[in-house]
Image (spheres, protein in one colour):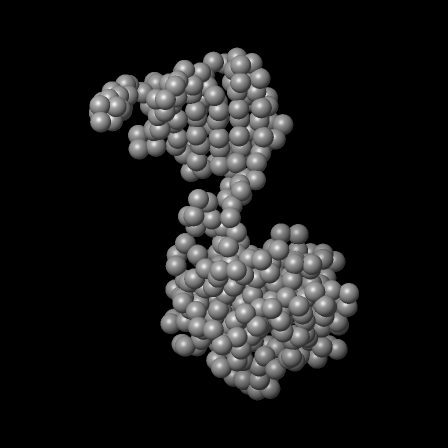
Length: 406
Ligand SMILES: [Zn+2]
């Protein structure tokens, strides 16, 4: 009891000691003391705006001499300019001598500096999490993001990426659509810290069930038949508000005031909305073309051409002959040429003929390599068997599953 009381008063006493300098922002709740043997002090905080390793160490009265030695060691494992605002650090003193410094680089790595007598060691260390497998389930009420906790937004984005060639998450979602996700969760001392990879996911969209299995050997997702979820073409080249004009053989032109065919789709979107290449390809035209305004034609390896009109401007390095990858930003929505307002005119041409993009069947993804089929289907069957006829909560940890995932 007496010891407890003593500790308590010592604690109050230490809290009342003025901090080094008068500007150090240290959360007092983060102080830790160990009175067992030596005097040890742990300071922790986060990097503030404009703070760097130099002025941080200066605040703690660390001598220039020691700082230079530490800086030298750190620079061998970590870029000194990469300390980020908001990231956590810890500085630990033993008998008022710096003993160690830790900095949380990101969710996966810590920078550790240790000082013993004259020796200083700096290492970049991987955080040693416990991996668990979780189930996340949800139902769509209005959009995908609202079906997730705000802190799990990245999972929602990963999910939409996996199914991006099956579902347009802006226009195809229906109330009552649902999803189930099997995902890695990383824990420290029993506390959840961060999600990892999605290992399996299924999405029920408008009555149709889509599935995606992660396969380690390829670091990619495949459907239940072993076909890659990465398709050669995206469903649409942008996030749009509405379609103002569809593919038609005769439409009344709002500016020309005549009926004439409209061989593309007009997507209304805010001026400046990024437009993405729907597939890998080569720019065969990028310039001004009368009614189309700023216009891009991409040629794809299967012979298809995708065309993008009325652009405000072109993406970086977009010029004749440039190679683009699926999803690259090639331009921005505008209203150049014959257009009443900002929209993207989008066309697909096959053999020089414009085809209704929405009637096209997007070619299926590549099949999993032959020699990897057995491994993939073993994993797929394990998951199917595991999930079969089971009811899950919206979020739960799956016990025992870990072992099957090595
Ligand atoms: Zn158009």
